Each structure stands twice: as structure tokens, then as C-alpha cells.
Image 1 (cartoon, rainbow, N blue to C red):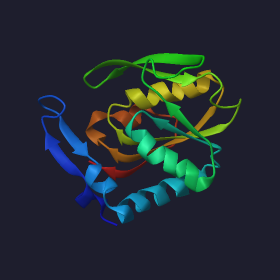
Image 2: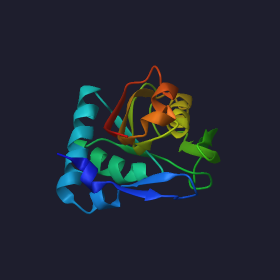
Image 3: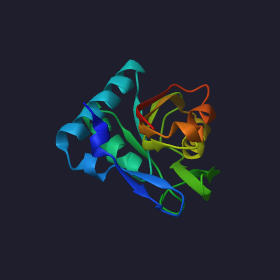
Length: 170
């Protein structure tokens, strides 16, 4: 399936010089969305995934339905101040700023095999921070699954040592 026709390019969003890849047209097309979930499910099964981890916020759009489809737990990795129970935090750099991510301390059991799902791999900072969080709570990252990879930004290199799959590469 040619998913590129469902990805809209928006210039200068969220700030000048950024070309934003908008996935909302894909989300409106059930067959395209289902295709993405099918591909992510293949990745999860191949890696013997036990937990699906989604990165706030667009990772939730793919991670939660994927976990449901595979009858697996879903764990959200959240922005600061969103998790009510004891949690671990990691600060990281974005392509245009700094941020922090949190995970509940009891999100995964020791050694559980976690597949991280998100819509976009850019510089890799967010994904790398997520891997660190999973490892801090003693989970095992078995891979990353992204809808889109912006290859020129070098995110894949930041995830060296982790199995990384992208459906689309720009």
C-alpha cells in the first residue's frame, strides 16, 4: 500500500524551517491505518513482544490499538506531570528544545520484552530517552517501530544497538 498519499507535508510547523509530516489523513483512512497496525503487529510478533510502549502523544494512536490487537499490555511514556504514581524520569534533547519523559516505576516487570511504537523518528532523542526509561525499570527493549523516519536527521544512528523499523523513510 502506498502510504505516502496519506501523509501531508506542512511547511514551517511548528516553527519556521520545519517540514511537518502530518499523519491525520492516514488516521482518517481505515485501510491505511489498519495496514500500519498490521505491519507493526508483524514486528511485534517477530520480536516476541510482551509489552507495547507508546510515546506521548502520537505513539498512543498506534501503540494502544496495537496492544489491543495482540492482547498485550500497553504502557504510556508521558510528558512531565502526567503520571499519578511513582515514576522514573529522563531529560533529553529535541530537534528544537529540551524535554522530559516519565514512566511508572511498575510499568513493566523485570526482563519483559518491550516494543516501542511512535509515529516519527527524527533525531532519536525521544526514542533514546524512552529506551533508557524502560531499562531503568528493568524492562528489555526488543525494538522500535515507527511509521515515518526522517533519515537526514540521524535518529537511527542514535538508536544503534536497537532493532529499528520504519514503514516510511523521507
